[in-house]
Image (cartoon, rainbow, N blue to C red):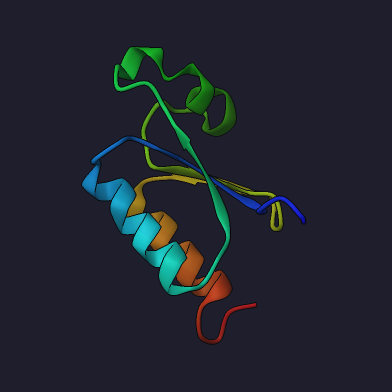
Length: 86
């Protein structure tokens, strides 16, 4: 079994993270969830991959894209993997 190409960095019960999860599920994409520290200043793993400590953040190894901010992620996922996407 291959590892999912998309890793989602998220917080428990985060509405912005849930918005991205909904989009991933609607598009039928496999992804791996990495839950991060609730304390913003301790989210070093997210900072290492995305350059910022904000969540949600995704890393898409398929396309080489790393991004944060839920609206941007949803737009990217729909544009890349949705109707008319790749």
